[in-house]
Amino acid sequence: MNTRKIDILKEIIEEQKALIEENKDHEEITEMLKSSIKVIEYTLENEYKNPTEPMVIIKKEPENTDLLKKSESDLKQLTNGQVFKSWKEVCSHFGWKETRGDYKKAKLKELDTMCKWHKEGNKIIIDEVYEKQLDKKDGRKNNFGTGKKSIYYKDFEIIMLKLFELNHTNYLDFTITQLMQMVGMVNKDYVKYKYSKGDLLDSLRTEESMIISNDEINNFYEVHQKLLSEGAKTCLKKLKQAYLVDLKEIRMLRMFKLVVSDEDGTTKREYFDREATKEELELILVEKRKLLEKIGCSDLQQIYQRRLQAEFYRELRTVLEEKYQISFDYTSYRAILNKSAISKELEELQQIVNIDELILSINGKAYKKSIEDYNPKVIDRIGVFEGFKDLEQTTKLLSDRLILS
View 1 (cartoon, rainbow, N blue to C red):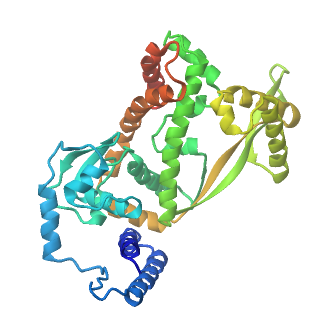
View 2 (tube, one colour):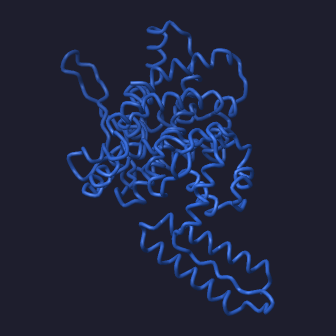
View 3 (cartoon, rainbow, N blue to C red):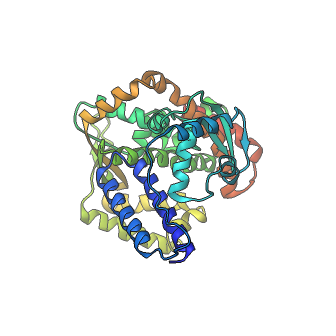
C-alpha cells in the first residue's frame, strides 16, 4: 500500500471519529462508524508492507493534561476583534489541516468552544474569546444566535420547542408561513397579505401615503419567503433528527363554494381548506403543465428566471377556479410531538438561556436580517433597476409592516 493511500485512510479515520463525537447521542450511527473504523484499521495493519517505517494507527486517546494545555494555548492565541481573511488562515493559525467535509465541521465546533465568531464573506471575525474553553456540548448549547452566518436558527429551534410544548395535543398542523408567524419570524400582516398583495398595496398607499409598486411587494415576498422559510425548515429538520418531532407533508387545497347572502340576495364566495385527493392533485398537475407549455417555459425554475411567476400563478388560479372551484394548492405539515422529550429538553435549555427573554428578542433579530439581506439579494438577482434609490426606503417600510410585531 503506497504512502498516499495510507494518508487517505488515516484521514478517513480522523473524520469518522469526528462524526462519532458529533453523533454520540445516536447509537445506531456511532456503531456503524466504529465498525467502519475497525475495518480500515484492520486493512492498515495487515497490508502495510514498509519495514523501515513503523505503522501508526490513529487511536482516540483519553483527555490528558497535554491536550488541556494545548486548548489553553489555543485560547491565548485569540483576541477579541481578531480577523482571519479565510478558513485557510484559521487553519494555519492553529496548526490544523486545511480540509473540508466532516473534519472541517469538527474544527468549526471546536472554534465554537473557544469563542463567539461570525463570517463576513470569506473573513472569520472573532467577537469574544471565552476565559475558559467550553466542552463541546456546552459550546453547542451556548451558541444561540451567534457564531454562524444565520443569526437566529438556534433561537427559533428553542421557540419551536416551547410552542410544541404548550400545544394542548400531541399533534399540530401548520404551514411553514403560519409557523414563521407563530415563532416570531413574521407578523400577522405578513400572513394576511401573502395571498392578497393588492389589499396590502392599497393599504400602504392610503396609510403611508407612499407610492409603491406591485413588483416591489412581490419581490419582497419572494426573497423573504425563501429566506425565512428555509430557516424554519432547517429548524424543523434538526428537531426531527433529534427525535423530538416527526413530520408529514400534506397537500392542501384552498377551495370555495358559492352562497347566497341572506341580507341582499347576492352570491358570494365562502372559502374553506381541506386535504387534496389524489384525483384532484392529478387535475392540478395537468393544468400546471398545460400552462407551463403555454408561456414557453420548460420548468418552474425557468418561470422564476424570466420573472413570469406572477403571471403563471394568476392564470393558474383563474383556470382552477373556473373549472374546479379551487383557488390554489399548498403544502401543510402535520407534526407528531414527543411531548415528554420536548419538556425535558426545555428544562435543560432553561438552565442556559432565559426562553421568555429570547422570545422577546426574536422580532428584532428577524427584522435586522430582513433589512440586511433583502437589498443585496434583490440586486444580485435582478441587478440595479429603475427606482433603485428608493429600494432601501421600501425595504424598511415593508419590513416594519410585515416583520415586526
